[in-house]
Length: 533
Image 1 (cartoon, rainbow, N blue to C red):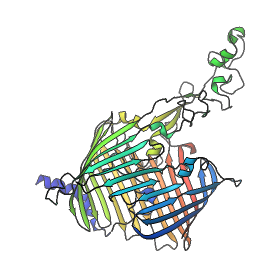
Image 2 (image 1 turned 30 degrees about the vertical axis):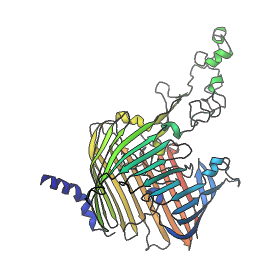
Image 3 (image 1 turned 90 degrees about the vertical axis):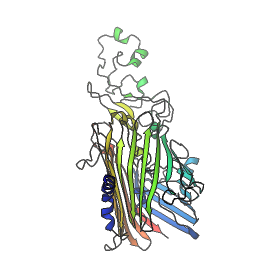
Image 4 (image 1 turned 60 degrees about the vertical axis):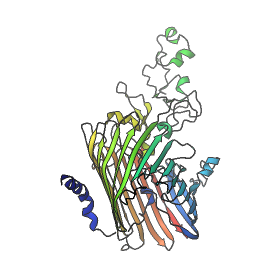
């Protein structure tokens, strides 16, 4: 009896909203949701989207002409992304057209079939990738910095009838192959003459980032990433404290104030003028010298996560399904986390999940989430209190937070609903409790509408998220773990739309816990005209 009451208590939050009438449908604004299911094209189908407008890349505003031709037939699909950017003088931005790999990155996607088919693959931009029950990869996107940076990722997989065995492999970038994932699964009880256990699926998953520092290129291989290497193509030089174009290693005046530094503070002065301090004791050397400092990274910083999961359909029909699931994950050399029990419900056009979660010390769920490409490591600089002038540059990888995280216990819930194919809502909340709960809360929501009551307004989408925070901060909405996005589509005429997109996320450069100034706000803005035919 107690067990039945406990099960009812777990299911009640899922069953209450089941009054909404809803059929599975695609959500608009694919940048903010997982991979869609593709339909079989009985005939060759062509499409073209042309975007004309402006876009800001690396702080520079360009006139943009973007061509996206697409073709599909049967289970195949192919699309290109040809982006032409012109500066204020009408000159083409050539950075994306100079090398062979630049041409490869013009592929928007090349796909075959869906992830439930016997064989499938996709190469290109992948807006959302989830593995297992989401403890390793959960809505990870290789498009976070798109179009400023474009990764050509990919996945392929097999689904067989032999004990329901299958396999899938994933990479965020087929050239770098740094963020990788793989899973294998089986339906071990499918040989039993039991409809209840026939679809019980057991899976093993692995996800890894072979080098969290890989977010920042190091062109000359000197261990100082280009983002703070003032001489990124010279392995013997890296710092220039006064930005005068002369490396600190050969600069007599590190502060750029016009005075020669004291040789005790600047070794290059003594090397250039041996004994100068002894020979000229009364010379007004600069004794307030504060050269920049920089951390060097000559080795990689990998992180690897393993998990075991299962799914057990409890009941299935055309309109209603209820599934029980669980997942146990381990971050190598750190902690572990457990989802148990977990329940998923689908009622027509309504989906929901409810989970009990239990995490040990040094564990983060959904390590590879939709912000991971930004958070895998971050460049920070600090100003030491003793002089408050010298800058120290370093990289802070995501796994550096793990030793600070204590064990937690709590729950996770999510809801996804389609109301009359007009309003689309998805939201989720993670609520964990513990003595050192510095990353136990997450909250994200997305609201899309395709209102027929407002003339010509085709779509409006808003998205906001805070991931792995000590508490959800509704006062300071801009924070290190937040992500804001939006999309607006307004019809100008038949087949012609005005489209605006905005994405914003953050980097706490000075580690003060606050997002201040434009340098700590990373944004991508795109406004233009879309033609469809």
